[in-house]
Image 1: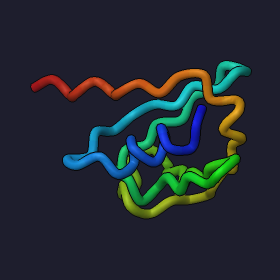
Image 2 (image 1 turned 135 degrees about the vertical axis):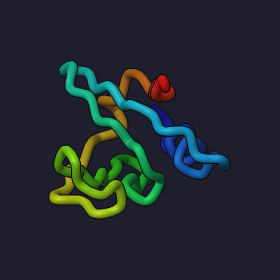
Image 3 (image 1 turned 180 degrees about the vertical axis):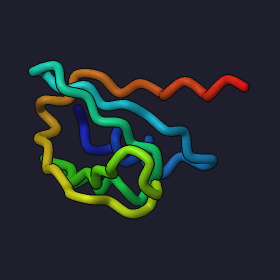
Length: 79
């Protein structure tokens, strides 16, 4: 994935939560723009524990943008 594509998704207003899928099949859900920091070749993602505040991450992971195969919006919750 080009770094500009990820940066565009993070900067979109209003922000739309999205899921990143990597070549080995793992996925990461980005629910707040401050939890994703794209760089030229990699991105740092803040990961939250289930049930935790969306702005406070428990740990982080660095992913190589060459391994991102899909960026898709998350479905809006149904009422």
